[in-house]
Amino acid sequence: MDNKIFGKYALDNIQIRDKSIAQVVCLKAVAVPHTFGRHTKKVLGKMDVNIVERLANKLMRGGTGAKTSGKVIRTKGRMQGKKLRALGIVDRAFGIVAAETKENPVQVLIRAVENAAPREDVTRVSHGGVSYQVAVDISATRRLDMALRNISLAALMGSFNKPKPLEQSLASEIMSTAKGDIQTSYAMKKRDETERMARSAR
Image (cartoon, rainbow, N blue to C red; front, side, top):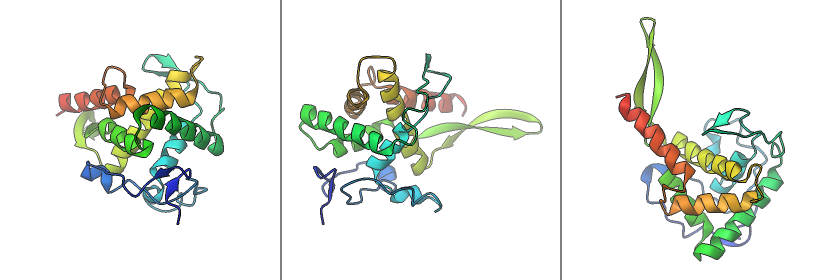
């Protein structure tokens, strides 16, 4: 059985250092990461979806329509439902990552997710008619979702209304987050912001 994603990148030697992330990351052997939504009706079915497909799913967004980190993103649905287009963007981004780092891009993505996943968040609690925020630990599935969402959102912001193509923006964000470069990584800045709010709400 061919266990290479896009027929190029092996998945059998990927190392995950974060034990919390390791239990929810799927590295199923698939040539084309496309499940056609078979997981949507199962509880926590997305845990059986390859992490590369989950990244492509996060790219299929219509834009926030509101300010995100001081920027307004309205893609007017150009990526919504365009799964094959999103997979093509991820494939080309992986090619850029492989050429620049000389590593397996799936391994680089895993390192980026580990660096971008926050460990604490805040939630709103109402008690006696008074609402206030309290710090809570984040589940492993939400940590992975937040990391992938911030990486894909950074890619969209990096290419929106700019000559820089989306695949180049995605590759740059994955590499800078994997290296732990907080100066250039939007996902790591969002992680620190989330954890800082949680610390102040303890």
